[in-house]
Image (cartoon, rainbow, N blue to C red):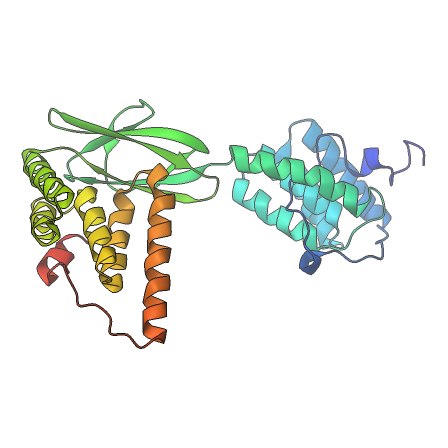
Amino acid sequence: MNPGDPMSPRNLIAPGLLAAALCATPALAQETTPVELNPGQKYLINEGAKASNAGDYAKAARLLRVSLDLGPTNVPYLNLGRALQKAGECAEARHAFEKALLAPAVDQPSPDKVREVAFKYQQELNATCPGMLIVTCEPETTRIRVDGAAAVACDSTPMPASPGKHVVEGEAGDKRTSREVIVRAFQETHVRLFVRQPVLTNAREQFRVAEGMLRSGQHDRARTKLLEAHKTAPHWGPPMFELGQLALRDEAFVEAIKWFERYRPYAQPNDLPKLDRLVTRAEKQLDAMLKSRRPVARTLAAPDKDEASSDK
């Protein structure tokens, strides 16, 4: 096949235009019989490649969409996704890549080759396209900074953020706090900041006393003190986690799961795997207890209705 042939890999998919796509599974495999492109499709694909190489991604996308109107095939979907990605249209690019996996395939380049190169660009898409960072604060008057940027109100407005680690800082009056969070492409990452106030100082003291009771085996007294700490600072996570562990120890599995899930929004990212393991353990033990018809342990430390509603 000579380079001037419109069906050559060079003209069909210009260098740098292979789009990102997921590796095809058997359920998503394309048809094995190659599709023959008509002259109009070949022309539009080549013109789209030229426009994209020239940096005119809007024109490239327009031409490739016209080509797809004449008949969907894998290559223009891939090229469309790549052009959209270059234009910063990440969500539309991902959709085009997904469509490329389902569309009929041309013979050259081969479907395997397209998937091989496309997977490389899928990783690029996931590494560069933003996720959304959503921050809530206590007190609500807190102002926040992300990675040292200008302070803004903490009002739960979704903020685009590149994939990777970010530092979220909160300030209320002369008090400050910060958390490190991990943002993933296309996903929402929720963060709750609690700027230390005098009430938290009291809760920390109650929690410290509870820890001493736990070390000496005074579990019932420790539970009472942990509930006091939680009531003092209902948005502070450590008492919730310890109450969950106490409930799990006493086989109050429903209560344990409740406390662990209430703690989840306040957990640091590196604590989440441990939290998931504890929830799974409680769920499995609860399931085994129900199957064996053993009585489920009584509720040990449920928040009252007023307290629960104040945390919503």
